[in-house]
Length: 277
Picture 1 (cartoon, helix red, strand yellow):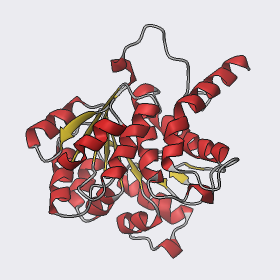
Picture 2: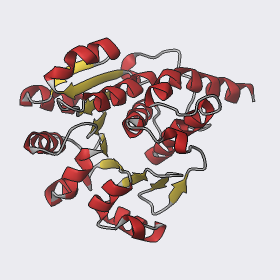
Picture 3: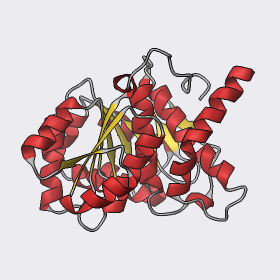
Picture 4: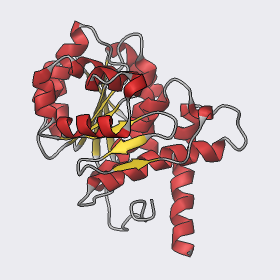
């Protein structure tokens, strides 16, 4: 965090802080992609576009007016949005039906090696069944963010048998960063190392928390530019849980929207305390 969250240069514009595209949110699960998009905005992404079902348009403009809307079933709009993005989030609320698979295939096949791709939620479940997509993702700067059941689907390792050695071997096979969400989340890096959080707790066990995390990771990758981008991923994951722990001092349950609404102050306070030291 000390290395990553730095004061913004005075001579800046929104293009300096990342073009994030979030993709997901079918008719039934629009809230997931709204939280991911909102988290990206509040964590500092310069430009955020949300590719989602048309039924989510009103809610998106009401909750995240800073984000632009893309109809994710319009192939031309979707491909153009993918091409323009620096960071992509795909999966929150996407679903696992034929439409979702078509969207996932369209997005992944149009990415390039310069982009960061955060694969979350139902996109992990779909990709686990599509070797061709996994092959493409292995050539990209891919970050998978599964919970333990999604990791079981992707890795083939049963939850009861998941351990650091087995997880790391599968992660190396995937050639991607893996953020395994659980009590004291573990991050498996492409160089074979791993980081385990010592912050966060059961007060964060609420639907949408992972969707919020993806938005924070996307915003961090878009605006903080380091040669080793996995340091940025580590900082984003830590910030998410550290803020949750801070809020839990006065809350029995910390909601994803609580995290989102306090991100700006949390990051500002952190930068100020670092400068003063």
